Length: 218
Image (cartoon, rainbow, N blue to C red; front, side, top):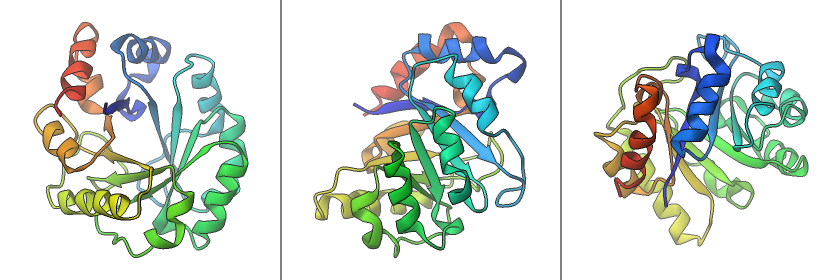
């Protein structure tokens, strides 16, 4: 069954504890953390200190999506803060194989994310180390963007690569995911739907229904 990962980027941080509680009560599966440094992407969000506070508020798995330069320098800090998944961008990593090894050595699940323009030539060399491939279906840096339809071919190609090589990594899709396109995205092979504005713009009382609709879109 597909998993739902609300992204805190679109949450009301003045009510963070309540927002996280609503994620739990909605039946969602993962808390997606968009970590931005103002260099790799044109925005700044939060770091390990806030992740630690979030960890204290929920037992749901935390996926720290590191949209930052030199992510290898911060793996230990995000793991110590309580991240269960650590996802790095292929565009930022000169030594991706080593970085994924380091993430797994820390006891976290290792993810690789790629921007809309990025190809898949890198996948074969690290396929045995990946627990997750996070496909960006918007240009990273801001929430509430529209899904880029051209990303569909990439999701399909990643799913085909996984099947051909009998691999078990999850495919997550992040960017503009909503009720209207969830069925298509799941049909392409996605296992995890990251929902930011679609989730947090929804009234709290209606979020459990939204999660059910997204999950059964398949």
